[in-house]
Length: 102
Picture (cartoon, helix red, strand yellow):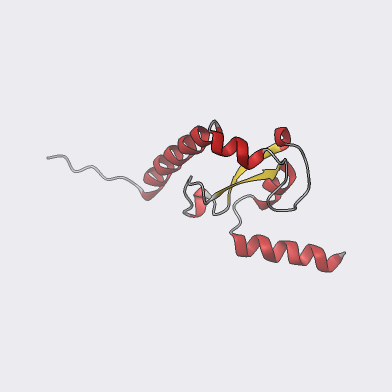
C-alpha cells in the first residue's frame, strides 16, 4: 500500500479544472443561449449585446463556488474583470461605494 499525500492545493486545482469544464459545457447549452439572449449584464444592468457577455460564477470557483445554473450569470467584461474573485457581499459593497461617490 502506497502512502501518497496530496496537497490541498492540488485537490483544489483538480476541482477547479472539473468545474471549468462543466462551465464550458453549459456555455454551449440552450439554457445559456436563453440566459444571454437579452444581452444584459447581471451586475450593472447595461445592454451590451449577447456577444459581449461573459460567464461569471457568482460565488467564484476559487472561493468554493460550483458551475451550476444557479451560480452562473452573464456579465459584461468590465464587471467580470472588476469582480474577479469577490463574493456577492463584497461586490455589493464595492457597488455601494461607487454609487456613493457619484
